Image (cartoon, rainbow, N blue to C red; front, top):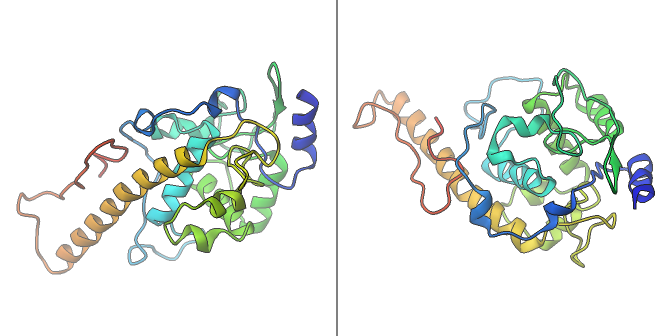
Length: 248
């Protein structure tokens, strides 16, 4: 199995990160959706985005997909930014100035995958050349993942807000933890069950859309000179398992 992982790392034209065996165990969705306190931007409004060198706006649909990839790849880490520092095997990179480009060996696999979306070094080099990002911080990792989704011709399907088996299969060659239409990993590695991914995605999407809608309402109120009745921005209404309650 180790030789298989090494071959994937060298030759696959995808992220092809190696997912620890424990990541394939099915768990109730609510067990992996604690409250989130992330420093990185969750959702952007088109009307708020200034001219930027970064190519992708982070909509609720796109953020929900990014979160789901992290969940599948084992870097969700309760939604905290520490997930952006994860290297294969669970260790943390000391700096996010650049991709660590370090092969880590485990009992069964070896990989140089790193970051929230477990980028391989050659994949990250492609990202940098293609969209011109610098460093390896949360914002540029998000941009890199969206570039890879677009490269797989799956961005327009992502933007519909529907997590379908077909969408998961389109991303399976990029992320080994996503299932093909047969429910298997594209690379013969541990894989998340589609129903588990869809449940996580849908809960994210509902709450992310609440945040977007509240931000739009607050922006409209500010333009009209109005203020919330309690004198402070209203928080999104969260019910059931929460991932975004308490975010500004």
